[in-house]
Image 1 (cartoon, one colour):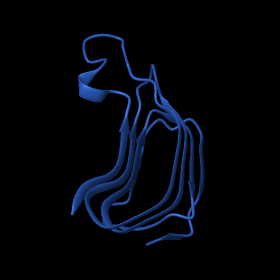
Image 2: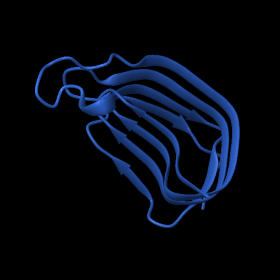
Image 3: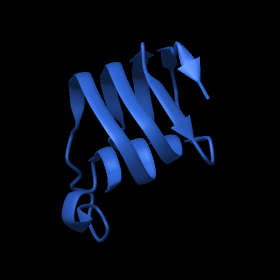
Length: 107
């Protein structure tokens, strides 16, 4: 059992906590991933106001059971297409500047 299925953050190892040096994260394409059970969240993107995560696409991602389906904060231009997951708590979307999505089934 996994805690997080896909997690991307621009604050690796505490970067930016005491300075302004953040990792720049962009242009990610995730396709054809499957998972049976995730304890916490299926898809998590955590950018910063200074360096949001951008241009990320999830295509054909299936999670049979997750506590939270999506958790996106400080992101731009996120695509979710043909993704299926059963969630217990729903979604948490914070300062998303633009989100393009197409979800076949949301249970």
